[in-house]
Structure formats: structure tokens, C-alpha cells
Length: 444
Ligand code: ADP
Ligand code: ASP
Ligand code: MG
Image 1 (cartoon, rainbow, N blue to C red):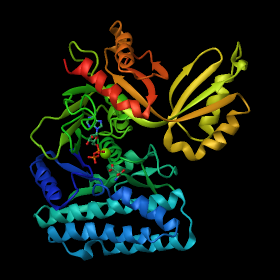
Image 2 (cartoon, helix red, strand yellow; image 1 turned 180 degrees about the vertical axis):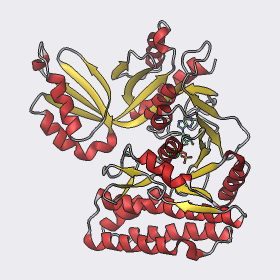
Image 3 (cartoon, rainbow, N blue to C red; image 1 turned 60 degrees about the vertical axis):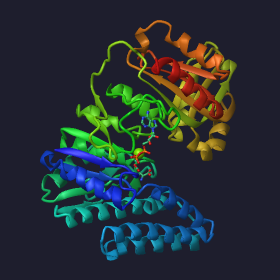
């Protein structure tokens, strides 16, 4: 069997959904299980609706009307009854009213609100399969067996989830259309896997089912040498390794959720990235070993909006345990640290900007150990390629090129795995750095 995941643009309107059903229909022989995202833009709309309701503005209810209008329009075009998702509309309207009256919005409620995008899209896509004569059934992430920890907005699957998925889906009689992104915790609350999490859902389902292939159908032809929105001349990378794809995804290549590769790699399941709007194109294939001949740099990724911590203390001189104490603070707040550089008296570390709300507490705790300063709006530029570690003078060339372009590099990290060189620049300099590097290493 294979898993076929379709992202927000791929299910973005009636014509796109019709396209999706045709693509799947042509592959019925491969015994597919389908995973879908919310209609493009809907998750952002739902999160804004929840925030609007919390602030007691009319915006919450207005956005609810827009949510309903968009889906009603799609269902009308697909000749589906509006009653199909009446229950979801009602539940969503009720919770937005609840948030409005209480003026309170917890991460748990936010996940509950966000879940409606996928709950509605899965029902619509599944109903369109049925209308086309292919028996299908919509599944929520939890009906498909995904159980997570309780970390709302960024939950992780529990190990036993894989056996449950296998049990629940092995007995399938109709084509399953599963909601991406959403699941349930052990205590029964709805959780989400982080923005863009439907890719991760597809990989989790793929691992649970022991799939032959996990297909990520999106709006670009595979993983490219850079984000095509930043570098129009970016090209599709035909084949890359799990490790390369994981680095790219983690450092900003939005085409894959950062954790998609984990479950696939554990069971050595190939991941193929394909274009819904150009279905015959080969796209990219991610496999265990994919060492290309020649060029050691495969792609340039970029992740904006990070916060840089500059930590100084003379206590680090000759001391042991100092770094452990610093990272303990980040761990206690469940904040992943991305880049690190250390000298004898200072430590630089970056974290994702979405931790900004925890900043005050972290700085005050770090203040007990060292002098802590932060700078926001920093971008990580990441040069990725399996051969970087074994090719002389790549780092020299990288920094000469960005330096000549007038970009100031604030921090550098190159791990011994030899897979990437990452550095930090101002948000505003990032696209220029990416274009310069792409031109030098990938357009010749
Ligand atoms: P989906 O809704 O299908 O999950 P996303 O918007 O999450 O799609 O991801 C696809 C987008 O990722 C592309 O439109 C592209 O702009 C962006 N992207 C960023 N980096 C890359 C890259 N290296 N290769 C391909 N796409 C990339
Ligand atoms: N709908 C979710 C989001 O927009 C998940 C996804 O599209 O993968 O973040
Ligand atoms: Mg995505």
C-alpha cells in the first residue's frame, strides 16, 4: 500500500479536489490511503478567528462566516449536500462563542478550533470520491489510530500509535481519507502536530502501515534547490537522502514538515514529493542513500524569525557543567535550540521566534547563571549537501560570496556530520544571501 498526502493548495478549491480524486483513482492498484490538509489558508483563518473571539471582536464571528462560505462554495460546485458538514459548523460556531464570552483561549482550545479545517476537508474529499463511484470513508486522525502526548500545538505521536494505526486501517473496506495535522492525546483531547503537520501525519500512517511509499502531493515539483518563491531559477532535486531532506525541512524548506522524515527513516520507507498540478512529473525521491556524483551542495534553505541568545559569563572559564545549566533552562521550557556556537566566555544559541512569549521567563532564569541578551528577527541560512564535509574550502567560498554581497554573518555552525553549513543573518538579508549562494553553487 501507499500513502498519498495532499496539501492545502491541492485541496484548495473544487477543481483541485476533482484533480486529487483523479490522481488517486489512477493509482488504486497501489492500494492507497489518502491524507488531506485543510483547504489552503483555512488553518490560519481558524487561528485568527479564535484570537479574534478571545479579544471579543466581531472578527471571530466574521471569520466563521468566511469559513462556512468557502466550504459551502466548494460543496456547491462539487454537488455535495451542505448537510455533510453541518455538525462541524455547529461545533465550531459554539466554541467560538464560548471563547468570545469567556475571553479565554488555551492551547487546548486553539487545537480544538484548528481541527475543523481538516475535519471538514476530509469529509468533502471523501464524499467526492463516493460521488465518483469510489467507496470511501473519512477518518479523523484519532479514528485512524494516532495517539499523541499532550503537548498542544506541537504534539508528538506515542510509540504505540503505530500498532493502533495498523489495527484500525488493516480492516479498511473503503478508501480512507484521513485528516492530516490533527490527533488526540491519551486523555482524549484533540492535539495538532504543528503547522504544516499533515506531512508528518502521512509519514506516521506510512510507518504504522509499513507502506511501500509515502507520497507528498503539493504545489511544486518536488524538493527544489531553494524555495522557488525566493529563487525563481530553483530546480527540482531528483534524489536526496533522508538526512539531507531532514536538514532542509528542519531549516526552512516548507515543502516538508520538519519531522516528516523521522518515521519514514525508521522503517526505510521512500518518500516521494510530487506536484498535484503537474502529476506526470517525476518530482523528488527521498531514500536512505542518495549520493550524487560531483556537486556536494544540493540546496539552500532558510528559516526566518529566530531569536539569538548571546550569553556571557567568566564562569565558563575552566568550569564544567556550565553549558549543561544553560541548556537545562531551555529544556525546562520545552524549547528546542537550533544553532549553537561557543567560545571560552560566550555562548550563542538560536531558538524559533514562536517562543517569544516565553522569553521573559527564560531570560530571568538565564540571568542567574550568566548575562543574557537576545536579538530577534534573525534568519538561519542553511547550505545542505551530503558531500560538504569532505570537500575542501566550501565554507571559505560560502562566506566569501555572502560577504561580497554585503551580508553580515552573525554566527556560524558546521557540524561534523558534514551535511550542512548554517549561519545567522538579519531577516532582511536572508533572501539576498540565498540568491547569491544559489547563483554560485547551483546555477552553473
Ligand atoms: P502544502 O500545502 O502542499 O503542504 P506548503 O505550502 O506547506 O504546501 O509547501 C510547499 C511550498 O514550500 C512551496 O510552494 C514552496 O514555496 C515552499 N518551499 C520552500 N522551500 C522549498 C524547497 N526547497 N523546495 C520546494 N518548495 C519549497
Ligand atoms: N492545515 C495545517 C496547516 O496549515 C496542516 C497542513 O497543512 O499540513 O498548518
Ligand atoms: Mg505543508
